[in-house]
Length: 181
Length: 214
Image (cartoon, rainbow over all chains, first blue to last red; front, side):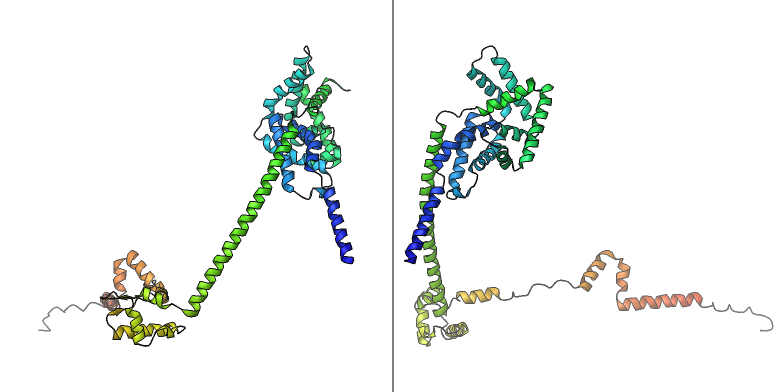
């Protein structure tokens, strides 16, 4: 009787564990957009960013079981995509993509008169962003993602929340200075 | 205090924030992940099969090697092996050695006997049957290989010998000659004689002849 009870308990705990394991398809549905934006903010290239998202989920697949052990799944996924994008950045020069990116945005917004001026302004800001110190630039790019809180940005960058706030403040200040020149 | 620059920064960040993923990205990623999952499952099954086969093969090979080593250790060389290594001069008869063994009472009953006794038996056979040439076994060859070389290699020079070689190459030949005891003694004697000659007062000159003397 005791053995049967123990077996049932073991089976129940295993079933709970399986239930607690996040499904990969659900993860793709919920987080692929965010990961794409994160990767795109670094690479500014649609195809490369999509590859990064795919690679990130492949890493998750390779991890296999044990996803239930991860407490904060979102910063964990963002961190994977972030690191993969940084790796790819060595091959892709985002500066080359900024003009296309800005032009695409303006075309989508379809503002005929202001289109060129707006594209030029965004392109200028992106170019100035590239010249920021690395940590400041990374914090600023991650802060563009609405889904990520300051604490989660800190998790991705390996910094405390106050450090992230300080980095963001300095990044904006430096960016303003550079845009004035 | 916001100015145009802040607006520009916010516009750029907003643009990055509102980037839309390409159409069908989720489907493509899900399909690719499914393929990978199938591949990894198939790959792991194949890998499992390969590893199990390799393990079985390794176990069989190890067992076979162990059996061979044990048999060699326990029973030594078989009669077939002995026949294979024996050559009979003139007659080319591979069975002659076995015959010789049988003739001198050293057939398979000698299994397990120490190697030295087999060698002495072969020496005895060679003595009484001059036509039979016995090829040494692998053990004998190994012992001969590990035996000290004949003649022994030259020993390295001693410190004194090295010093002599150095002197012969660098020092003045006169000094080298002086190394000989006889020559050195002769030279010392000459030096002493010369010294004596130098400090010995010259002999008095002969006195002139006078009338008184006369």
